[in-house]
Image (tube, rainbow, N blue to C red; front, side, top):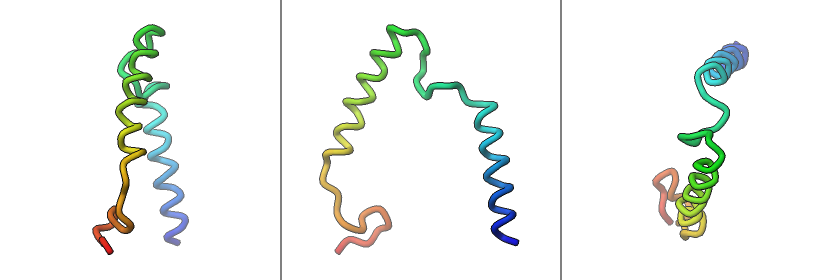
Length: 63
């Protein structure tokens, strides 16, 4: 029964997200600004990707 409830809940959330959100998570859909925002997002997230992360750090268990 819980599986059916979970599936229905996620279906509802996905439908609301598709109605309320735009096609892109970027602030502007203009081609020139879109390229700029993509480049800035890439620089921002590349630091997080390349940073060393301790095992178990996401759940608060650091060994």
